[in-house]
Image (cartoon, rainbow, N blue to C red; front, side, top):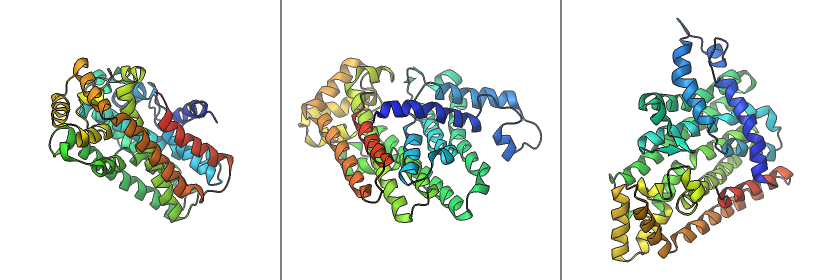
Length: 356
C-alpha cells in the first residue's frame, strides 16, 4: 500500500471536516454558535480576524494529517465504518496544530512549513490565543454529537482528552526546562528522554488511538494497548523528524536551515547518546554549541559532525525501528486479520522511513 497516496486522499477529507466545525469565516450559523450561542452579540469581525484567519492560514500550509489517518485506520481495523466517526478524527489534529503555533512562540522560531511562524505574522498575543482556542474548539464535535454517544462513552472520551492534555503540558515543560538550562540537561539519559517524548510527542497519537478504540467499542485492555502502539509511532515520528533536521536539506529548509534543533538547544536522542559516549573535549564542545542557541550554519554543522562521529544518527534510526516493531508485536494478535490491519502496519513503518 502506498501510504503517501493514502494520506493525500485523507487530507482534504479531514480539512473539510475541520472546516465544518472551525469555519474559514464565522457566521451566525456556525456550529459553535449553534451549541454555544452568545448572550449579547456575535462579534464576527473580531473572531474572524483573530481566530479563523490565523488558524486557517496555518492549516493551509500543509501537514500530513497522519493522526486523524491513524484514528480512521484503527476504527477500520476494529471492524467499524470510518466514515461514521469522521467528525471525531479532527480532535487530535486541530490540537496538534495549536501546539505547534504555541511551540513556535516558546522556541522563538522563525519559520514553520516554509513560512514565517504565525506569531511573526499576527503577533504573539493572537498566536497564543488562537493556539489555545485550537485546544478546545474540536471538542465541539463531542458536544454536537453527544446524543449519538452513551454517557459512559462520552465520559471516557473526555477523560482521555484531559489526561492527554496534562501529559502534553508535562512533556513540553521537560523539553523547555532542558533546553533552557533550568534542569541538568547534560546528565539526562535515554529513559528521561523517552518519558518526555511519551508525554509530549506520543500524546496526540495516543489520544487519537484511544478515542478511536473507545468509539469502536474495544475493551479497556485493547484501548490501552492501541494507545501504547500509537504512542510508540508518535515518538518514532518525532525521532525521524529530529534525524531529518540533521540530514535532509529539503526538510531543513522548511524550518529555516539544517540543524534547527541545535539552534533551539534541544536534547534529542542523538544529543543524549553522543553526550554519554563522547570524549571530554567533544562533549564540552557539543554542550557549548547547544547552549549558544546559534543560527550560524558552520557551528551547527560542527555539532552535527560530532554526533555523526559517534554514530548517533544511526543509533536513533535503529531505536525508532525497534520501538515501532515491538509495539506492533503487542497488538498484532489482538486485531482480526483484515486489509485495514495491513494498512495500519504499513502506516507505522512509513512514519519512520519517510524522507520529508
